[in-house]
Each structure stands twice: as structure tokens, then as C-alpha cells.
Length: 484
Image (cartoon, rainbow, N blue to C red; front, side, top):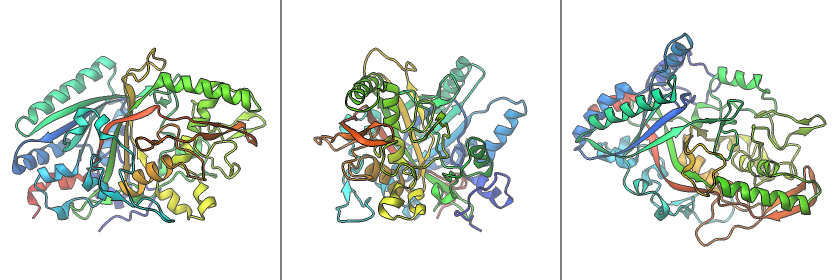
């Protein structure tokens, strides 16, 4: 019997989901928790039968959702860290395995691939519009060569040892082992190194220095309970039903589910970002009604201060660090947190309900699950711009078109969302080549609409490549040769 994907707040030990969690790959409903990873991209070179036999054998190494939980419990009981493994395939990977199309995942973006800029996507829910090809405004010619070539799949290896040297050595050994296994079957086109960065409070941060991953949807009751301890959920429901991220695996059995994966290598211009923030802060201080610094200007861009404090929340006792239990009900005109702020663009928290009378469930259905990790130099104050540093963006969703592409195109890249002349997302918003972004409107004083300042801020994150993938069920991967 198939699982009810409308459920939320379930537990890992729920007897109704044991078969599902045995077949479901880990890192989907809960992050794997390791601070170091290797993303191994590959392209099949063997015939389809050889390819299938290798995948079936490799499937025994993949960490399931249930296996991930068992590893966590063993570690907490005094055991050692274990290697975490995911396997995901692109549409060309399904082709190289000789899988019949009736067993392919259905999402249009998955089937087209991220490099295809001709397929048109209907991503606007209302009004007169033309479905748009290349809704992400990507320039594939600017991608790294490894991403411009064919990618059939990616293997994620993650580990956190007792020391950086032990971790690096173990992961290097695993990559070498994988290369030997794949001889004659596939060639590895890229091994991308990822590492978690933390601030002095041990919070996970990205290269601009801001806490990352604060508002991920929660699927397990235990995780929602932790959310309650960190500020409650009276003003924001962080829970999410399983159909936010899971879809039936068309090649699996009745208990087989998977998820769609968006992978993008995002380079960050750290020095340029903070230089422009200095200019924004000086402009706001000169033209607005209060003197501000670059960190405050950064909070207006991101929607949060570096430690995760929402800029929309302030009381008589100062800033209230609610992290995730907040909405914009008291900031309907964007005078505390601008409409264009990154966290507000990507998670409007009721704005679409007020502005378009859209059901809250529709807005919440756009949420994605982020499992990204940083790459490159750890220096947060480099001497030059566009260093080898940034975020390996990984999002999981039940629909690439209706979640990731919608969010990026209809919200982040849309200068008219949530209202006209809002401007693009100052972090990840991107217009098509040749288009000039309009200035965003910034509050000259927190919570006061009397003085607004126009200032254009964008262009400090660029995509170096990526792909759309599917993370199949373990049952499907183990039984490729039995598909009719």
C-alpha cells in the first residue's frame, strides 16, 4: 500500500513508514549532518547492461533514510562516524541505463535538462503571459566545462572524521575506490569538494557570512519539536507534508519514492558584495533618517542579520532572535524587511495571500528543501573579487518546475514580485543577458515609509553550472535488470 504523502509530523519509527524509509535514500527528509562531502559527477561509457549491473551492485552502499537514522543513533551511543552515500541520475543517465520511458520521472525540467534553454515553462500562475524558455536566465557558455558536457549522474559522499586530515584522506580513498569500480563503466567528469563553514556560535554559514539553512521545512515531529524549543511556531508553520519533497518512483514498487534534485554551483563575489554594502549603507545614512552600517545594509539584502535574526522583528528591548517563528503580518508594506530581501522573495510568509488572495497552501507548496554546502576558500575577507568560493546549491522538491523554477523565475528574478517596482532578489536574482536591473526601494528608516531610497544591488552571485537530477528509490536501483 502506498504511503500517504499528505502526512506531516511523522516519526522515523512510525511502523506505517518502515518499508518506505528502507527504500528512500537519506538526506531527503533530514540532512545527513556531515561537514565534508565530495560530489562525484560521472558519465556512463559502458553498454546499458554493464551500466545496470554496476548500479545494482552499488545500490547496496547507498544510505537509506532508515540507515541514516541508525548511523546517527550509533554515533550518539559512542560509535564512529560512517560514510554517507547518495546516488542520483539525470535524464541522460536513465537513457544510458536503457530504462524504458514509462519508468522515467515525469518532471519536464528533469527530462529537458538544465542546459536546454529552448523548452518553454509556464511558471506564472495568473494574468496574461507567454511561457518562457530559459526561465533561470542562464548563460550556459559561462559555465565550467565539466557542466557543459553530458552528466549522467552524481554520487554524494559525506563524512565527518575526528580531524580534517582523516576526513580528507578517507574521502580521497573513497573517490579512488569509486574510480576503480567505474573503470570501463563510466568516467568521472568532476569531483567537487564541499565543506561546511561555521561562525563562532557553531552556526552553519555561507561565504557572505550569514547563517544558512534556518528555515528548511520540517517533516519529522522530533524536528518540529526542536523548532518549538527555538522560538515556537505560532507565527510560522515550519511543518511540511511529505508531498513537498517526495514523488512516487515510477520504476519502483509500492513503497518506492524519490525526489527531484536541482544542483547549481554558485560562485560568490565576497569582496564586491561587502564593498557595495558599504556604499548602500553610506547612501542610506545620507538620504535616509538613520545612520546604518554595512552589516545592517546586508540584513536588508538578506532579510536576516548574520546570526539569523530576522530584520523584520524588533521590539522595545531590541532585536528579537526568533529565527523562524515570524511572518510579515506587521510589515505588509515592506518597511521593516524590504519585499526584495532574499528571504522574503524565496519565502513570502503570507505576502501572496495578502497581495493575490492566494491560498496559504499554494504559497507553502512552493517551498524547497535545501541541502547545499560551501566550496572553495574559507577566507571571508579576500583581497580580490570572484575568488574560488561559493555555495554548492542543492535543492530537493517534488516538482522542479512548480517549486525551484517557479521560485527562481516568478519570485527571485521578477522585478514585479511582490509588487510593481520591487526589483530582483539582490542575492540570487538574475535578469537575461542585456537587461539592466532597476533599483530596489530601500527603507530609509526601519519601519518608516516617509523616506525611501532607490539603490540597485545585484550581481554578486553567478552560476558556474549545474544539472537537474532525480534521486530514485533504492528498490529501483537494486532491480534495474528486472524491469520489463
